[in-house]
Length: 263
Image (tube, rainbow, N blue to C red):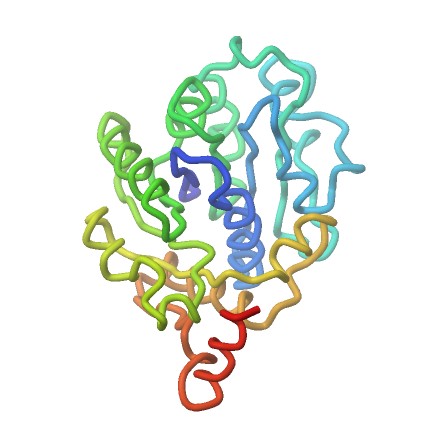
């Protein structure tokens, strides 16, 4: 039986889809069978981020409507054979798709995977319910900004109404230079505010945005290391957190972050 983990936040633009995609890649590289499921019906882009949009024939709504079987809609990743993507629809009437429908689809593929990662849409309306209802674990993705923390706090409270056995925190787009300069919320203050276990810190990295915008692979060694630690923490229960400040420490680091600040 697969571990079913939903990526959520409440706020849009925090990077849930990129976290879902890159976490799935790293888990698959560790040897696990992974399915990435996009339930952001109408505004789906997980297939684009994964670079498989041209391979999509059926989507999750086709399974729900009985037009195909789950295996026909799952798209195998071009580089990792144990990684699959179940795309969403950009044209279907989202109001007719319920959480129960998504749960039924996931139950049909449950035994074929070790991990099922569910990409949740922004907001806390019907799309949130569709994504959270089938899950039994949740990763709350935030950025180090007050608006993101506030929305995440509301989401954590809402998750108590669902069958979520475990909630973990991922801080995305953390800038080590601003952190050391005191210009950003600290990791410790974010964890205290949300009061859930920290599972990963992902650095602000242009390589993530550029790779995802063209449907490519994450090439940055720094960010890949951060996602590797996140995947190991999720699977092993370890607590290794990527240090976003390491390259900004010491004399050279001090010069680097102050030059960057002026630029």
